[in-house]
Image: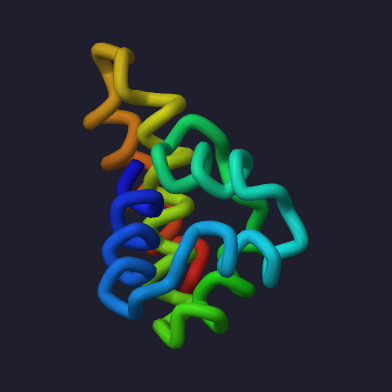
Length: 96
């Protein structure tokens, strides 16, 4: 829900309504509301478009989007931290 919290904060700080954002994303307002509350996942393209609409860094929103996805998968796993550490090691190795 990290993405949803950030989107809500940005939207409110700019005085925008959910319906204004949802119209630009070409989705209905209830769906945008669910994305903002963390009840539904946004698509990658939507996250990029939201960054544009909210005049913010797309890298920040994409990082939060990916974090939410990872957390959804590993949160209840006993080996979550170990798995994430191994994954981080592999990501670093593969980037070289």
